[in-house]
Image 1 (cartoon, rainbow, N blue to C red):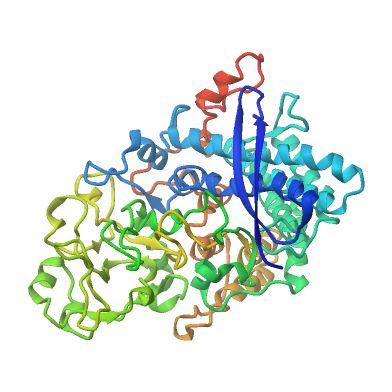
Image 2: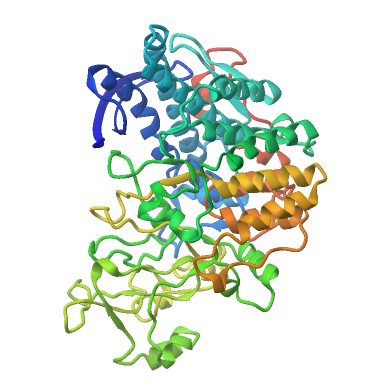
Length: 585
């Protein structure tokens, strides 16, 4: 059936009843037709569509990435990305209730939850009257609300239970919050559709979220103590993940980076994702461009598409790869670390280190030619001097004699310091909050998501689905549950299924491990799931969040949870004891 746009405008009452918002959203409707169908798809559109804003880089995504040991965002050259100091504070765990990153993450997430409630209120009477399509959509919204509340529990330690826009939310914590989310997911798991694709909630997605909930239950019960991983919880994780694995509906992608390419919507590894195939008003490519050099133009057919010199990989996270592979470069040892796409000419300059030597040795042969639509930058963790299109003094890309784009070492034309306009984009290992460590070129970069080829501008839109659950994570959850239950052999088998599945570039397929413990499993989750929003939660669950890494020495266990934004606490002040601030703030 041809896909079509459904546009709906809803007036929503906030979860905490102190504000309302006029919301307009678009959704790709894949199955419904007719007037009644438009009511149903129009009800669920705002909830699904707003996931893009919830997971925006300056909202919930940034709030998971920057406080972890895998990413750092300094005040670039004293000119870029200070933003009131919110990223510096988040990385060093110097949180306050007025931190704008904390507030925006909270606001967008609670708005998203409000949209699921609005949809539920529209769909419930239709479902009660026997409308099968409405009932199916209702189950999806209940599952989506549970998932979003689990994000709230993970970051702020609370759940907002609300069944009517006329009611005041009930604030739940610890076991009560776990029980509520679990009951919501269990109420739909046996009746929800399982055939609408990764852009919609499905039975497999619900099983996956039940597994996540039980895997983290020990942390959610006692967020400031040492987690007690019970056998009952781990048994549940194994049961739920095994359903997904044994269903045969999903398979691991031989090419790791195809999981994050334009065509990933049909990738058989995806279980749940934000559908971004050109139909949402707020779809974005921020997961692709945030970390990339501002002087890099990954889509030369769109000359304005560039990076932002945002966060980089910490030297600490990079070191985990080095420690794992020893004398072998991780780019050679693991297909998840790096994919070479640029065709660097076989000239002397390609092997030299240091921009001064490079400048001295660039020759008229130091380039290659490619059609603008065919250029693809390297992917994975980017180190050293990058290759890409270069603009001339007239602002146009340099071209070859046949009119194709000339690909050369990328000049540092944005930013600050001694490298601007005279050097190259040369990503260095060391990055920190010092003046030298904050230059625009510092830090290895994460290029996991492709710059969408179908975007009209390279940055503002994308056809690459944001991956929120995939089969590799499911295997790793089961491995962790088995390991915590004492089944090291079973855990090792699951980890090795994931490691050895990336066979598209066999010379880079990681070798199977011979043993696994919690430290190795933590490391393997980092290798497989880096920059997908898991690292903060993984560090907490594995007891590593109070460790020291670059520009972070804080050891306060209270900082495992974020402060509830002061605006939210103030907004609820009329109800005594309703929304209490988290400890430590």
